Figure 1 (cartoon, each protein chain N blue to C red):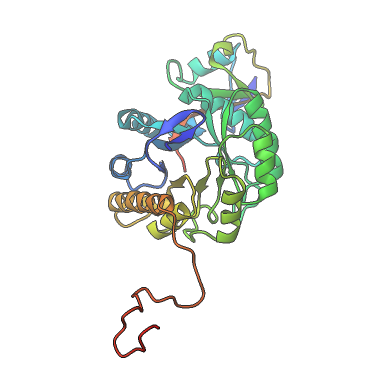
Figure 2 (tube, helix red, strand yellow; figure 1 turned 180 degrees about the vertical axis):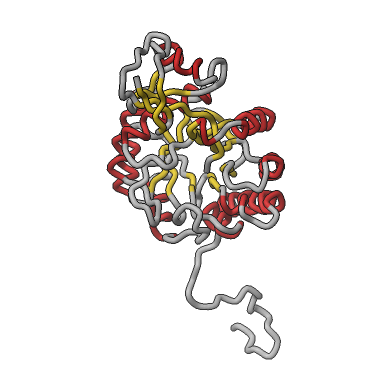
Length: 261
Length: 65
C-alpha cells in the first residue's frame, strides 16, 4: 500500500533535510538524486539570513517538493507553537515537524513539552510530525494528542550512529502497525536506513548523513537505493532468525550416507 | 520608543508592526512575525500597535533538518 501522511500519498520513502550542504547547487542535486518528495526547512531571523533565504526558496520551489517545516531549536512549548504558526504562514502548509528540545548533549526530545505542543497545534488545525523517541507511552500520548504520524529517533541528531535501540524501535513498530512511522535523526549510513526499513518503518528522514558526506549527491543516491531495498525486503517477509545452523542444501541422496529406510 | 527586533534594540516611531516592517525594508518580502512571543499573522500587522519595550521577531525560510 502506498505511504500516506495525513491523506497525502507519498511516492518516495526518503525524506531529506536541507541543512549543512556545501552549496545550494549541491543541495539541489542531492534532492534530485535522493528522489525525495519531502524536504525539511526551518525559520531563522531575517538578519542572519539575507539573500541566502531567497536562493533557498527558489531552489525548493524549482525542485517541486513538499516542504516540511520544522521547529528545530525550540526549547519550550511556547516557542515551538509560535514557530509552527509562523512556518504555516510562510510555507503555506499545515505540516509541521515538531521538535521540542529537552536536553542539550543529546538534543533529546522533551516528551512532556512535545505532547503538550502537539495537542495545541493539532487543535489549531496543524498536521503534526512529532520528533520523538521510541518510548511507547510517549507515542501513545502523541497519538492521543492527535498526531497521525510518529517520527522516533534512530540516534541523536547528527550523530550518525544508526539505530541505537533496535529492540525499542521494533517494539514501537509492532505496537502501532497502522501508524506511519518515520525514523528521524541519527542515521549515518545507507545500511542503517535499510535496517530501519527492514524493521517495517515507513520512511527515513535524513540530513547530515547526506550533507556531510564527501560526495553528498552520490550518498543521496546510495540512500535512495538502500531505503528502497529495505522496504522491498520488509514486504518480502524476512526469514526467521535461529541460533543453530540449518543446512540449505538438501540432505536426501547425500553421497556416502546411509540410505533412508 | 525602543523595541527589540530579532534580539537587537531598535529606535522607532512606527505606529504599527506593519510600519516597522516597512521602516526595516521588509515590505513586500516573505517574512513571518511574532510580537512578544506570540505569532502575528500578516493580515493583522497593520492593526498591531507597538509599545516601548516590545520584542519583535521577523523570520524567513532557512535550511533545516
